[in-house]
Image 1 (cartoon, rainbow, N blue to C red):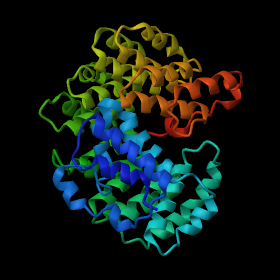
Image 2 (cartoon, rainbow, N blue to C red):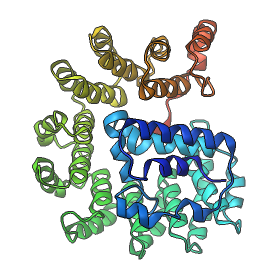
Image 3 (tube, helix red, strand yellow):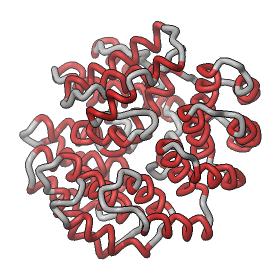
Length: 421
């Protein structure tokens, strides 16, 4: 099966930019997941050279182009939730044993699917993690035999998502892989599974990378996860440098927040006010990771709709029940975009009153981003919907099931346990 996420990426990575291409790509992904269209692995990467020349996203470079979507859906959604959502639309979690057996399939697309489904299982709260970790040794054995870079990258992705430190040896061996994308995947996995020795190794390699080298991005992410405070000065300088590569500045903002660098607070707030939506969202994420939700609310009150979007969405992503009154206060804002992102933030906090607010979005808003985002949150919160955008059906369902909220509410998915990258 050609994965829906690959088709989603294919529509987005052609060089198109803006809201409409992103949403079109999402629609294509959902439609093709349902159709179950069959393709082979070669087709997933047939236009790699063209994509690289155009500066778009490729499997080999491992997803950083998703940050182009950040001004519209948020840094977390652009880098993490959308790819995961698309994976899950194509590869529903299945029995661990069945996926382990599928790793030995001769067909590369079947192994690709097995890696993807094992990675997706890590986000399913119904899956027992101890049971899932039984897949780690078979993945490691299979990686010894893989020659296709995309398959290696997907295997490393599965190891990273499963999160078993026992796989660190396999991950570090791939730090020497000749393929840039595989090495990037290995660096990201090392940032999640790594120990003190791994941290020192990545620090040494980081110091040898020239400014502007694309490989610096996964190193920033990995070292942020490993709380490598030695690079704080480098990252603060990058964040403050208007002429530095914007993606290095974006991931520097994230890493500084991830490391809890209090000295970065003012620089992150400056980034939040940037005209570049990617940098603004990264600044909001960094401030949220520092836990300063009052500062985000203050900026949302004083800034424009775009600034409020970044700030309110990240209060929802990283906040707590304590922040619900703050977000509810923005529901009375005059700007409909501010009201929408306040409702989104409440939904991310699993506040039940967000359900009728999201149904109102389906009824009152015409923008595809707002409607698809509302639908996604309704489905996540309730486990119901099957892609239905009809507000009348949702309202009738909620009236019937609202009293069952404590039972139907899904355990918050495991994306919150995961660091980015």
